[in-house]
Image 1 (cartoon, rainbow, N blue to C red):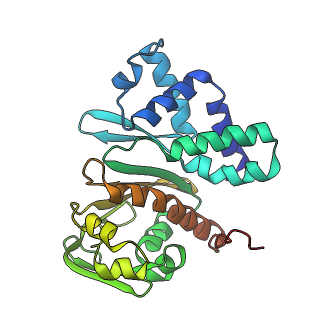
Image 2: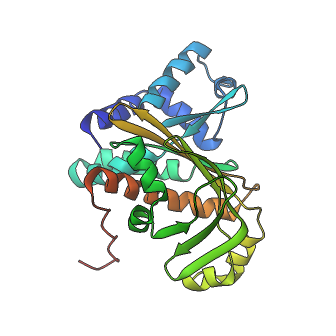
Length: 272
């Protein structure tokens, strides 16, 4: 993460009113400007200005739904800088950052996962990284057999597990701009391969099938990538699972495109 981006994050967090707005999104994500203004001793104009600063720092992501503009708390910049600050700076700042990171990652869930990151790459290379097994295998450990045309079936491969299902399809494919597909099926072999509780995976399988959407927006030398994973019922266990998984996958994708290498595998406790 570039130093100027780090500066923007801490400048945004320095104001107590902006931290209050983040607290509001932590309590209930995906709010409109009107909803965020309720109960605050701030004018609508002041709230709008604070939200603009939070958005510029990538701490807030905005999504449009019809005429409504919804605001989502975005943990990406905190995930990106937490290790750097923990390793290099004073204990007080470490504790403050760690507390915020925990709050961002445990935000009250709506029925969707929204995450925005900025990658120094081109829209064409990022698109290739989303569909080409030469990339997806490296940063995700997954690959897909499909022609990437809307309506086409997708066969999902991950480790020694494969998933083929008529409902596993490409929904939208607008090269270099937008890609959307339904999520994979959960079956007993998935539980076995990934050493998961078979009853838990069976419960996941009973949920409606969700979908993931990647939106690419070129901005000069970088591309803004927004990932929206939605279609979950209230209290979804699958949503809780993917919300833990996506940040690591996307951090790995960003690192691969910007450095040519993936992130190192985390060390097991007690290992040097």
